[in-house]
Every structure is written in C-alpha cells, then in structure tokens.
Amino acid sequence: MSTPPENTTRRRLLMAVPLAGAAVVGVGFWKMLSGMQHGSFNPHNINAPVLNRPVPDFSVPDQAPGQGFTAQDLRALTQPVLVNFFASWCIPCLAEMPTLMGLKDDLPMWGIAYKDRPENAAGFLKHSGNPFTRLGNDHDGRVGIDWGISGVPETFLIGPGGIIRWHSAAPLDVDTIRSTLAPLLESLKKS
Image 1: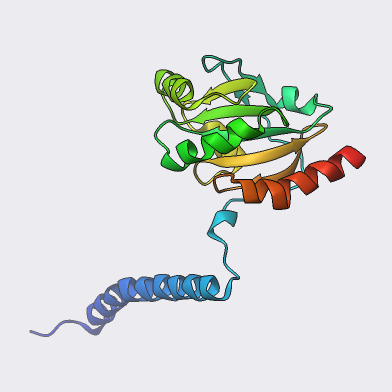
Image 2: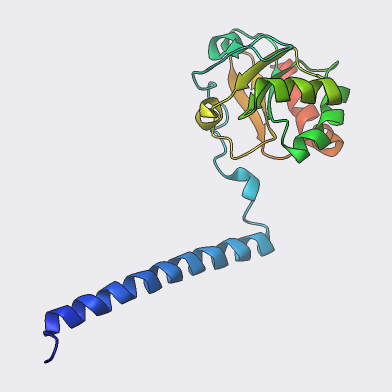
C-alpha cells in the first residue's frame, strides 16, 4: 500500500524546516564571526541604549549600605553621574572595582545591584570597597531590561537632566576613562 502524495510532500516539508533553520543560524553565525574578524561587529553594542535620550522610567529600592533612587532623581541632576550595574557573582565586576574606587573622588557614581541578593551585594561592597553615593537593588532584573543592559558590569554616563551621554558594556579601566570618559566629561562641563 503506497502513501498518498500529499503525505509524502508534508513529510518532506517537515524534514526541511529544521534544516532550513540550521542553515539560517549558520549563516548568521558566519556573518558575526566575519564581522568580528574585520572589526565591524562589536558584541558590547548588543542592546545598547539610545544615546542622548532621557533615562527610562524606573525605581530601585535601597541596597545597604546606600539609598535607592529613581529616574526622577537622575533627571533632577545638574552635574554628570555614572550609573553602574554590578553584581556580587560577577567576576568582571570585581576586577572593575579598583578602577571605580580610584574614580569616586572625581565623579559621583550611583550603583545598581543587578539580579543579586541584597546581603550578597552588601558583602561584595564591604569586601571590594563601595564607590557609590547612591545604591539600589534590581533584584528581579526589570530595571536592567528597561535600560537595555546585556549583562554586568555596564556603566552609563548620565548628564544633567537625566540624559544618557555614554554607555559601556565592558568593565571600566584606566585607558577607557582616559581616552573616552574624561574628554566627554570635559565637553559636558563646557556646555
């Protein structure tokens, strides 16, 4: 007994769908690798926020030993501030902390503990130092989604009026501060 032609066509179609999906993923992966080789793909730009726009509406509760904050607090600023998303479970965050501690006297920093238990974030800051003048906790990660972060650490320079002026999806280091952040801060002071 033979299979009707319509069942054979349906089976072939069902077998072709996974192969087509794998081909699409393969082409996308190849394009990404090709872009990285030529310097045109930057994995840190994934979900990058729109620069020169106001911070999203949000509110983070207090994270010991600091006081939480809201979008309205950032919009009321008259001077630049860095907003840094970090977590106690994040190894690059630990590596970034000495740089932040060295910068804290030159630029106010507000921190957001991302998807972290409050007691773990407090212990992390006690151990590594606390550069933050304001500190909130984004326990469920909703604020991070609103900001468009792709992981931690991520840092945003917020200008007067709560405008996002700069974003980094990598741990801050002295070279980045010297070559990118410091000139931007100077230009914000002049305007």
